[in-house]
Image 1 (cartoon, rainbow, N blue to C red):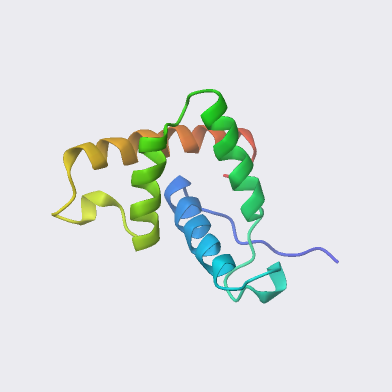
Image 2: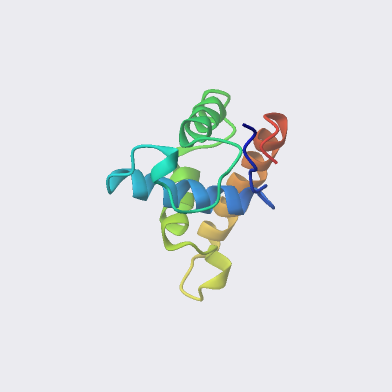
Length: 109
């Protein structure tokens, strides 16, 4: 049986989905069938592997990940909040730009 997956629109949407999925997993989600959201073409572990690969090739730093995680857990980009620092916005944009390249390479986008 072929499953119908909802495609992602962009890297930001993938990142928000990933952060939500990680939070759900921490809250007890154990399988795709437990997830009440849209079916997606990848698993949480696929995104973990991409992040690990990006770190190994120095395409993303811990600072990028800290900012991306902080704002991803809020489900908003830093430029949507007046309290965000310019450095956070820059790190968010750089991180997502590099993340987008990897997502396209792995055919997630």
